[in-house]
Length: 470
Image (tube, rainbow, N blue to C red; front, side, top):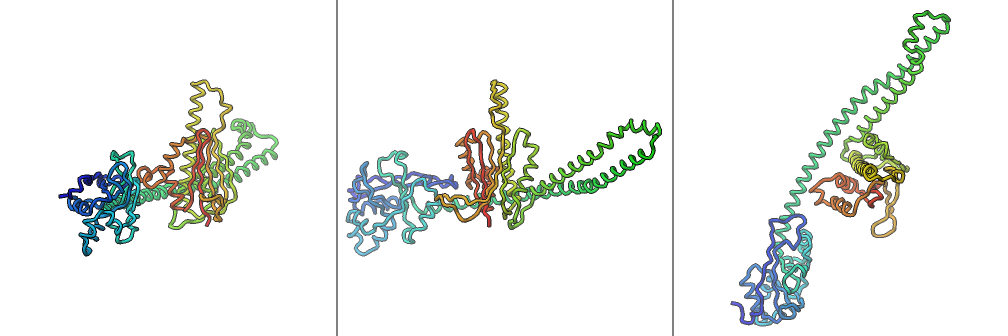
């Protein structure tokens, strides 16, 4: 039975949580917390009896006055501290028969106080950083007073063993997620490698006949010129041509053929050259990265990607290239090509969507301001620079290669930008692997660079890729 003086002591109240619905983003507020406080003037026997009746309560919160709305926080006494003091000589007289503030004056320690919004993983790390003798003590969780129906102090007790158990469970979930993500990445890499080998083979098969055509075009041009010279020589030496030959020349339009053959040869040469460049661009884009990065010409790869996207870049879209002199960049160029492709496709889609909206407005709303609308433009700028640090305006001594891809499309709202930025986090990227999130991962994690974005509604969007120069 509790002491007769404990009639004002409220029994411990458990605010139950659940360790079965925990995730990577779970916080201390999702765990089971105890609400239990006593006045500093209560006797130690009362606390001992409460601990005996409620063996799972990890400690007690001490207040200056009696537990009420005006209570002032004093500190905490854990179950471990009480038991350690009770095994001392004459402990019954020194502590159990005295007010709790006597015991607290001997056992005074600074408890670990964390907000209820603290992630479980972070809280477990802070709890383990305590001194070994205090790692078993409970943690004080500070809750939002508005979310609590109680008028007492905004502190709750968390059994540290439940915290460690929850952290162990989350670590298991995190390990499983990482394993599944790694498996997905391996499958994706294998698919991309197989596709790259397939496209590379197709490009190689295209280049073979292109080589045959290109190699024979020079002979065809020389032969046609020689035959025309031969016919001209015959015409010069024979002043009177037979009637049948004259009729045949008129029938086949010999004069036109003589002038058109060089043009045909030039057209075939231009077509073969274009096909050769296209096949080479396919090979560059589907380059299979090796274990270690290699130097690559960023401009050449940008040109290859623009050539592959030429069918999507309509005549209405203007591409401006501001290429500066940049050295070869040590990188995984196959993966960077995918980043450039993702950003350019996003820019093209935004400009095409804006063009359709403007066309619809002109057609159905009678909007006549076509001449005032800027021409859809994609601007690519490259340079070598030293970016400013986040903490000061001083520039870092390290040099970076900057690749900026901007468009004058509709831009993005703050909510859209926030969603994209959130997708860069590990947790969001696990749920949905978007093209921009994949690009962020390649630039930052794979190359140690920076992936920056800025956008303003109505003024367009700009992505900047910063790659370090080793």
